[in-house]
Image (cartoon, rainbow, N blue to C red; front, top):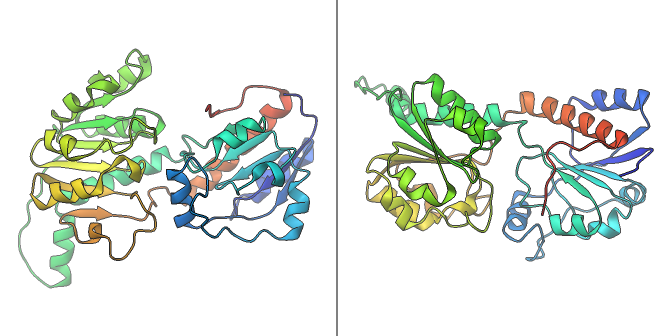
Length: 343
């Protein structure tokens, strides 16, 4: 792709690191247009279930006239979200840089039809998300929630926890996030199982004690004390965690999902928690975000819920800006971009 000058629309509202991109402009033919645009969690969630399209006609943010004028001349876009009708809004776009690892809420088909190279932010939050997984896991394993509750009520009652050393963890999806979870599991002295499409991946093999193929997930999770879902949303993974899969887990298993809510049949998860078959569930994502106040997930026993916030913004923006700058320079050189998304 031959691009002599980049004019990039920055839709993601950077908080502290704008100066890094400003400095990039000083030595290179790059110009940034600061045009903040963020969609609601409800709209983003709906797009995620519908190939990036707003099929429910939910309200989209108003776009000021001056944004329209600037976007028409831009050949690059940096954003968390992609407004509907991108071809009319960004007629000269050639590159879309997402600022999240997941991109199921982005209309990748529309971008491909426009001839736009789409890149994701895969990897920039992997360490933070892996830390979140173990923070929540230790909270359950060590009964920290109970101990905090006792402190609030001034109750002196011993609560002995368990140890995770020696436990078996199974990770579905050994991409950037899954790999970081595996590395930390090794430090804890856990037995590490994982599933991946490519079972001949040397790096993946080096991270785990045994690597299973995608068709052997049920066999793998039957051997685990802890199961972590870290795979992207695909047709194959939609509703993967259903009654059958939960039943195949050992009694007392802890289930963790930090990927996408569409992976889980939530009624079946609630049933597995109510019956006591699962010891606990840790969810940073749910099918419909934000979670409605009347949703039964709120009252499910031993469920740890968080509103899709396992990333840590103290390093997220810094890592995102570094990726943006790198890909911008690659585009100018005609080099291959990092984290290319293929439809």
